[in-house]
Image (tube, rainbow, N blue to C red):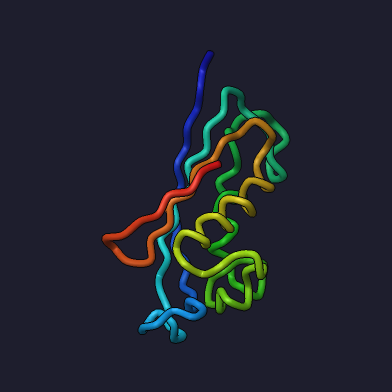
Length: 128
């Protein structure tokens, strides 16, 4: 059976603080977050932008978080105010949030994995 795997990468700039963290990360500060989304499927699908079954998932749908915070994304926002209360703002929790929100935007049967970096040399990966 064929299998397609695509990867897209994007960045967004946001501020956050880690609640009750004893140190500098407990204060409001910002990052340029680098995100990779890996999506796989054994079949191709249409998207909200293309009616033909020619893609695993639409890149535009996968990169939703890079939109401006005032337009439904995370760019130039304060994550503590943008993320639902059940998520924290560590890289691990941001990855989980991005996974959950992105999974709702892809066709059924598409598996995804999310990688998030706050700094050039540290990543967290989340998949369910």
